[in-house]
Image (cartoon, rainbow, N blue to C red):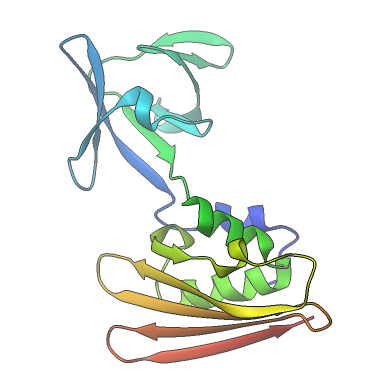
Length: 186
């Protein structure tokens, strides 16, 4: 499948949102994550991708303060039990790594990861060597990523070359011993 942008790929990823209900406890709005029942303060987890489930659909909203949301230009007061979802954020090093990839390499990487039943949002560890190397020289190295989809673990070694040659090689190793590799060259 050919993508025009990385954003198209991100939009199709599973497990890209935290979903849960909100409840006011001691005048503080608390978000209880649906999958884990983990509690967080609402203002600690909200970002620009907040959505609220109303009238049988997810509707985009903007968190204003306390229990106030802006919804379709109107003010909405959250109530106990409202269902929210917030797009997960990515670790800085991981986000920078994904941004550094060409669209075609990123597309190939994401497709392979998805075929192994992992989402880009399942990353639990990223060592991005590119952050420590000069960008104006010929460089090569390896980045190490670990994904957990709560059923299995996948380790990815991203071997890269930048400069006269531009290559990205991804080696995927699953916890059951399955291994896959793909290479992208510019």
